[in-house]
Image (cartoon, rainbow, N blue to C red; front, side, top):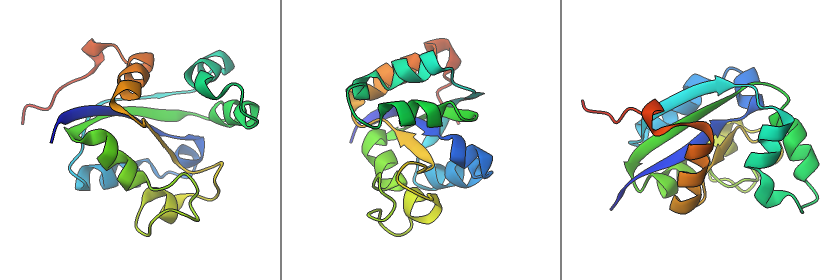
Length: 143
């Protein structure tokens, strides 16, 4: 197993519904450590840049609009196989297909408003983390 970092975002619906603590608790219970966190309200330019990989897809404009609809919490999680573990805790993108007990199965209201974002690979995690955080913003856990 490899020690990894991954980006996680509590999306606008999760923040609006006061689910931040519940989401954080699930990550921590799974053995992931929060090593950086910040709340921000994405601008259209930021959301378009962050989700540029989806710019040719039909849902891009709606995704950008949704991600700008309210504040988000971006956090960096660290742990053994953090990318895969985080995705397991989140569950499938479509909450109807997510395993019981996952964030999306338990908390999401729709495929569009599914509470959380997570990096899908170690390479994308590095890029996504750098989008929101400088290395000096991250604090490895020493105890």
